[in-house]
Image (cartoon, rainbow, N blue to C red; front, top):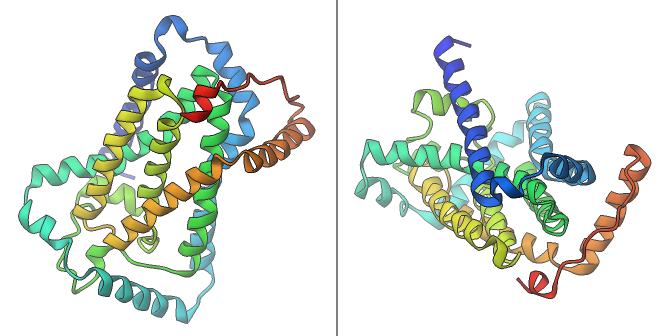
Length: 298
């Protein structure tokens, strides 16, 4: 790993951490921020953190197994499925690049696709720990779990390549020809997990969970809503996702959020989470404050 790329990664992660700290200070306010309270909240919800992280871990395991197991039909399936999605989309998204041909705009949306999406997926958990909002944390984690349960089978059995890799799409791979950004993405992205769009589904889920969490998260929900729109545009403009990927990702995000709000589902999953927490980690299920009617209705 050369020094310039190492410096790029260091700046990326340090800026992400710095932005999270700033976001917490703006949202929670310094006088309301208690480190021990946040640490206790993390300890109480540690298995929910595992549920949030489970999806990317499973995707990486699938990618590893697919690389280890040589299947002559896998490449054929990828071509077939990608051609099918292309037949639904045609060259519609090429219009974005043709009409908005700007290096500055491309760089901006590369930052949106990589950095802003990383922020949108990392900031919510830290915010909920800082506020010790266990009810919203539970719903957010369960919604992310459902995202993983829905998306993983598609990624394992329905491989679809990025738009800019299709010879007839006419798309320029704006993200992947960017030296450092492209190198970072290619190190973690197999480029065939397009349908549905995980960027869209996870962003939509985050926005909806906070939008439904009540008035106290109004400004945060506005931010996540604007970020989601920017991320959706970026995945199309940069030559990554097809329109059906985006539409399907939106539906997955809505479905995951709706399922996470079902009381029976919440309580069933929470019961097992608390049981495992107590048996493996020695964490007893403390009495949790009940959400108010306003919080439940959003």
